[in-house]
Image 1 (cartoon, rainbow, N blue to C red):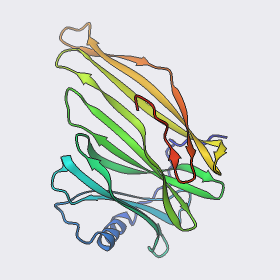
Image 2: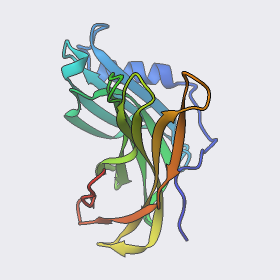
Image 3: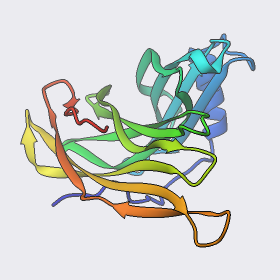
Image 4: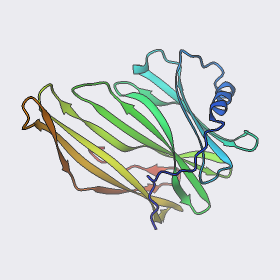
Length: 242
């Protein structure tokens, strides 16, 4: 049976997160200063409350518009605060025309195998354009097995909104929101992941009220595709408007 992964799970604890983030930053990134750009999140793993997930994204570049962020994903034992596993990647996230704006931990029920589990990191990016606004959220998945933390999915767009508008009532935007579910089918011993894209087109038109605009919302046919594991990672198929 598919397990839908966008449910909000209530079992969170942030009691020691501030201290944990500070301690891990000092341990692994001792040269970070207040002048650097950084984002972080911390959450007890509901699927295994003996562990806490900590994520740090840090850039020492001087311009946020052209910054590369190191991404540090750390799993901690709650009993003794010792690091169980860590996945560190330099310049994993970039800010260029589309800026990196934040991250969050996704603890939905990702089960690649019956014996192991995974969690997600959601990475947000957007621009500051008034006429060509763009926003996206990407999902990474990290598989914890045999005390190793491995990234098995990279930068799957799970939210996308973009389009064009002007000062008048003329504009058009496209939005995609993705729902993920684990499949009973397997590829290379890992469960396939089914993705359903909810697609919406939004047209800005003149309102019946003078000097005002309104949105005309057109719901498009949902699109479905499958992520399959190739032995090292889940492969994202090429789709034109993603």
